[in-house]
Length: 212
Ligand SMILES: Cc1cc2nc3c(=O)[nH]c(=O)nc-3n(C[C@H](O)[C@H](O)[C@H](O)COP(=O)(O)O)c2cc1C
Image (cartoon, rainbow, N blue to C red; front, side, top):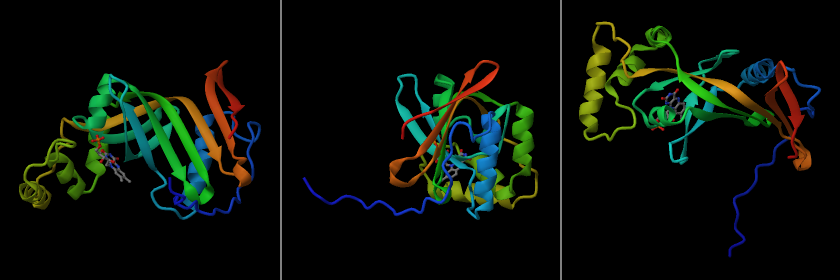
């Protein structure tokens, strides 16, 4: 046994404690309040989130993706429909999202079921992406083995350098996660953190607190 452990960062816990009465009754509204505060904190990429999926044997996998929209209809992200995450989502629609906003000592966990968005939405978002990203997404068969990196790069360069519009690949598009559970975590000194959970109940959502 060794007494060498990685150090814990010393945070300043400056955010006020939250209780289930201080948060909005609607978890999407509460998410928007926190999301906007994170954006104002000067942190870039507050929309990055970990996406956890599991295959049909229940084996989990997780990776970062970017949130592109959210609202009552769900949390939208885009990816390759042939990727590992997509294959797992076809096997098992249940997934989890995790946001960590360390400056504000906050974490948001969202769980729910995922569906593909319409082709129209995928094509529309794809058309707004920079040409270099369009070229990369068109050439890449995400999560398949890369056998020849030089060839891959030159295909991306050739497509990106052309002038023809790059169509949205059939195998690329969006997913929307419709939330069935939210947890908002606010760090507090002395490990007295706040945890507010929202679950469907009554006509909307029921809130409760968990021990930290
Ligand atoms: C900050 C960050 C954002 C990312 N955003 C996306 C994204 O929006 N969509 C995507 O397909 N991959 C994104 N990636 C790459 C994924 O983490 C991952 O490598 C890729 O999707 C393949 O994952 P898979 O093999 O589990 O399907 C991002 C990576 C990072 C670090």
